[in-house]
Length: 235
Image 1: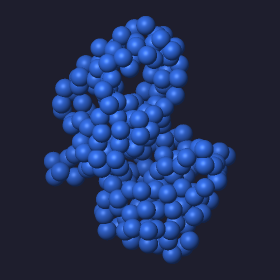
Image 2: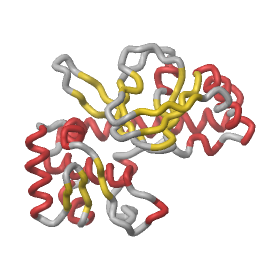
Image 3: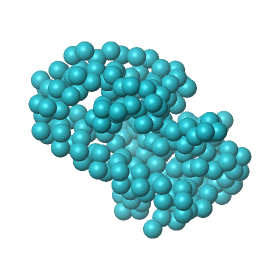
Image 4: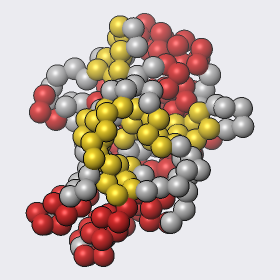
């Protein structure tokens, strides 16, 4: 089921998947001319906060979490990136160290693109420049909304919004109408919504008892998206 008209998913979710679509065939080929494909297993770190960037990453398959770690070694997941998305470009653009870390949340194939090739295409393609600027602007809006969620909403509302956003990440557009399976650990869910791990387990159990979701191990099925949206109490 599409969320169009029943939930403003764009307020909570951003994507860089369409960014490369504006490139000409020549520019796209030149961007990837020196790429190298890397395999990451679930849990493998792709880059760490504070390290110096030497390029950007294109997710060919799998999913990646971007996160910050506090002084107590607790993660706060900022964003989940999907197949076809770019990550790591913020640090290259700002000529600073990585502001966050990234790790695979499932086995992933990721292309590394040297920063020189990325910057070269930015200089050559005004359309790519403009699309990147739009993506960064929308990303800021989404992150602002995410901060307000953690600060102002109840734990059930925060979890409901996270599940709705993840549903968009995990659904296959080519299999419209099929059940969407979220394959994510309860700890990662807790780190997304900023609540205790045991509270996530309790809330998922409550959602299951209400017929909103079903579970099998770490897998979660959204059974009733309309009731889940009602749980989110979005305004």
